[in-house]
Image (cartoon, rainbow, N blue to C red; front, side, top):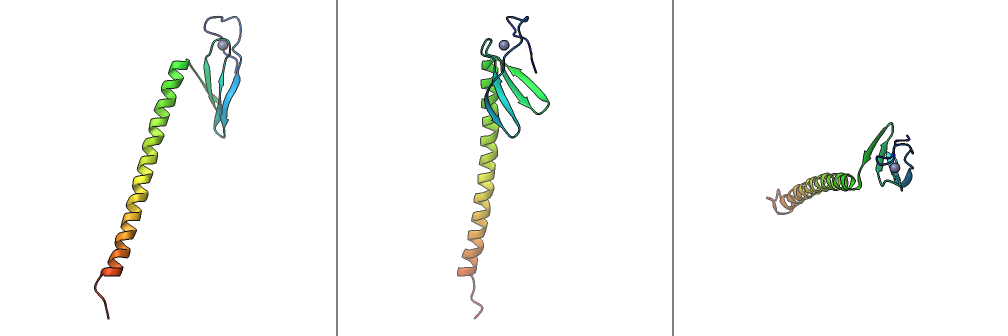
Length: 94
Ligand SMILES: [Zn+2]
């Protein structure tokens, strides 16, 4: 995808890949510093400030997901411990 520099629309942006993964990649135009987030057939352009905001937002969302996952794991571990504790200290059958 060749988009135009905002400041210099006669020249297409260059794309230098600075990160990639199984879902897409991030490239930057060395001339105008626009960041391009490419996911399969979708490409979104960001100013450096907007990209930082996106990164922070995605990071916050992931932290929340991780927190929920940890809570679930902790709850499962606590439930298992309670079952084991009940089995150890519960009424003896003989
Ligand atoms: Zn550019």
